[in-house]
Length: 355
Image (cartoon, rainbow, N blue to C red; front, side):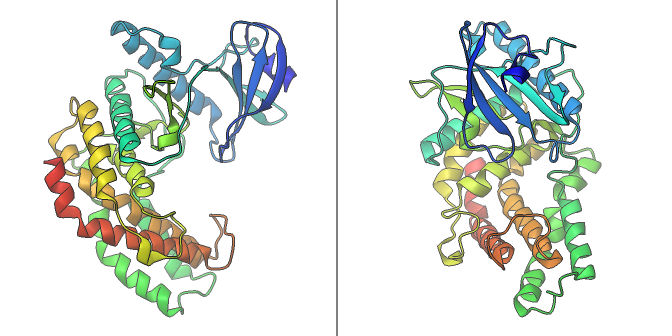
């Protein structure tokens, strides 16, 4: 680990490297040095992010643009408000390859904290922070690529479900419940693919979005103020629905996404109201009328999309998502269908709040 860290242009001598955090995708370590900074060493999961050069170019462009915006605004303590990646000593790139594994190093931000709690208060902070993140990047001159192609493409997900049904590789289409779920999902397919149609018609732009909007992807200072948005691997062109709907899919559900007690699933309007308030405060500067009026649609889209993805995987024989027991993906599907139904029932309230 020390040898890998020393391939980067860090200041000081490496004293210790130890695991940091509980991320599910990348391996992360804290690097303690005798210099002015500690650092974060991270192994990029190139099984998921297959084009690491594109990934890092995206991140460099985003952090560079945000830094310029903060400087122009006269912000103080900028190094705590945007991530700083360390170039390699060999070629100046912000990553190195060692034995087929890809590594990067960031400056560690001291006295900064992340939170797991999903409350109206933190949902408001989250909405404001991610809306501001998009606002700062609304005029970025760089062309970014998709780190995970078609990540939130509903037309693709609908097509994958139809292909799974037609192939029936695991022989599960004979199950009564499978047919019932399919009969429920299919009538909504056309409406849920609205974003792609609007984009083709020139009515819905693609913007630079975070695409993984969670409470724990923000860092706070000791006074509870948001410092910066982190975990930038999924930053890429997408519809604003990605950042809005994806947060609510997890945060507004009263239970975990794989809780079998579907009767306890409910879409929390207090979370929707708090997140929307924060988001609109910072994102209204660039949102078009089409984007704004369809934010409630985004709250429906993401539980629907995730239900389709879990369901297709179940029909295919559980080949994509890790399962803990037989039928796990079917339980996840039921849960997301219940969340979609709950959100659908509250659509008039959501529209009234968005205005």
